[in-house]
Image (cartoon, rainbow, N blue to C red):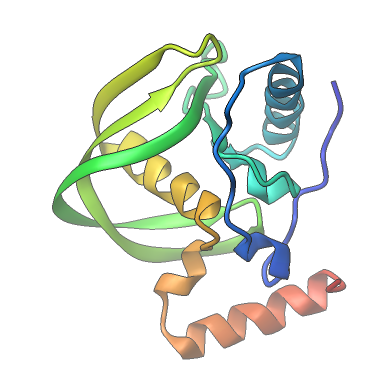
Length: 168
């Protein structure tokens, strides 16, 4: 396992669109292990492959608290089939560290994805699971959560990130 480099906004590679995974093999399983190690090291609750410069349609999540055992969830080729309601919640992102902003999302989603064994699942999520799923899926589609904000806020965040991280 290895710690992977997390790309930081406004890195242009965060806007690349991930490609579907056609075969779940040892390379994908190794990627998941590396992504998990990276996410836990960074104290995140979700991480998309595009955030570590891998253009594959896969993300992971773990919402267990510090005092709970790890509960890693893997989502391969995820898609949202339907959405209902709206909710505003504060979001953060490993690619935009120390920035937390309110974002409008669908309150509930019905989605489809594969697990590491290739089994197809359909699930209905609300609350934090729904918000995180939408956030990570946006990454796979080349979108970072700050792009939901006003142009003024986006520019402020870009300047802040450029001061912290040297752009490529």
